[in-house]
Length: 260
Image (cartoon, rainbow, N blue to C red):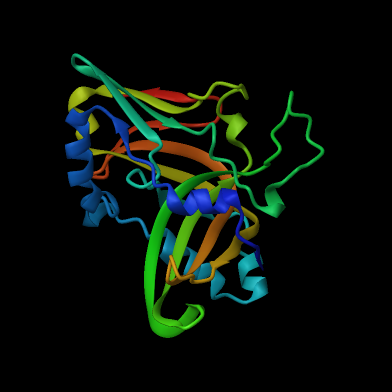
């Protein structure tokens, strides 16, 4: 865990929130389902990423190490990530979750000596899980001399699943559309969710902190914490976000599944 300085890449992460790349017909249904997608019904509850991270972070060092090899299930954030595209053709639809740019730009993921023809500079890939915003009051500050202002204090916690075995599922290539896909009935596309199953590996969790100081034009002290559950990806499930039912499952050696 460590503290890093703000850079252009982190600012882009902060300022740009992707929109679901779906036909307008599906957008209304997907957003309406978002409120229930986080828990998939009482009978199919999955602990939030925030809860799972906190449970591990609260352990002593030997307790964290003991979590290596434990299986976790997490819900992928499809609302803010903008990673899901759905295209319908009659009674069938194709859902695609793109992974081409989901690379973790942290120091522990960076491999400067990698040969880009055969490997990626960033070792770990990510799936976005959850964002939690915390407003922490205000104070009187003076960024512009002689002009006191009320400065807000805001923290945001972004949670991710970090894994290094993406290419266990499909071959590495330069295709911007590379990712996880499913062929499914059009009727299922309006309440579609994505769930990941992974086996925790060292260091189990990781965290970075970036801080932007309040200015006259932007009177907010903003702290961004990126928190990672670290593991080996074992499967991706396309699920019905209303019932929690697994529609189809992708395991290593696959990048695609079909719902009959």
